[in-house]
Length: 422
Image (cartoon, rainbow, N blue to C red; front, side):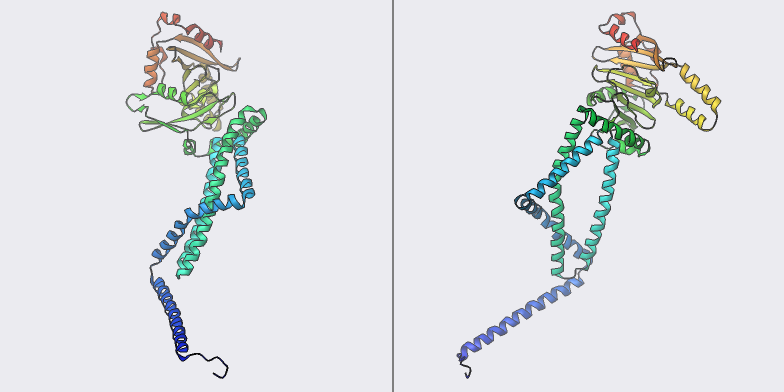
């Protein structure tokens, strides 16, 4: 050839043939892609959406592992800061909310609702993008992007959740040991927790890891209040503060709320309830507030001594007095209050370890600003247990046997002395 590039004709033809073959292959590949795209466009939108989600989710586990490995290998300082921050948040929140379980659950519920809205918005946007991705390449790119985001979220949870849980446990453990931390928890409780207990839905009280359901109710025989008290005493030890639980009949079962911590001297349940349980450190008799906080019956447990105290409720009368005052009927309210203070309030004290039982009648003393025992008599322990095992809103102390030999039972004199001492 004139330009000096003389190739054998066979080679030229071969190259020409290869070039044509190469161009044909590209053309065929392109046509195949076009054909696939055309088929995708005719594909059902739900099927397309399902394929994108399946492709996205199938990549997440592997990417979570690789993301964690990358954080440890290439971003150890940032990861340590993230973990430390999570642990710090856990400690601080636990110290502040150590006495405020309802506030904690309210905050968590709010965070959960907000997170649900954010997740729903992100899911909706991803679904719109998936529906508009009409080619294989667009769908693959979207699945890649979505799986990257989910993997990052999953890795963050794996890294921070254990640290936050450990921080919460540490905060709850150290809170009661230091007066300054204890005062922070009490301040949050007084300003936030107690007001919330009055207004949050009652269902929120029955959410938590220590919520219980006891098969102790029977419509014919009544409520087995004794075994309920015995069970709750074992699961609610004295922790340096009073702990309360709300009891609610649910068919043939007794539902028990999670703990509602009070202070070192007082538990405020929030609203009046039919049945309630709470702990005392050493005070053996219920207070006037205990009587007025329940409509039917209350249980006071002294975990240190193993003593159980049962009392009838006076909340119905208290609610009627408040109603009369609110409607301006002061005279009727005063008369009902006088009647309430003049009547005795029935209480039954049991020491299961020694099988001792004492029936007590209490009366409000305005001069001493407290309830005092007007009568305390030993009663047959089995009678008391049987009464409490079929409780129907009355203790019926007067119907229990009280033989004189009960006074000589070991521990009875000391128990009576403690009761009369209050």
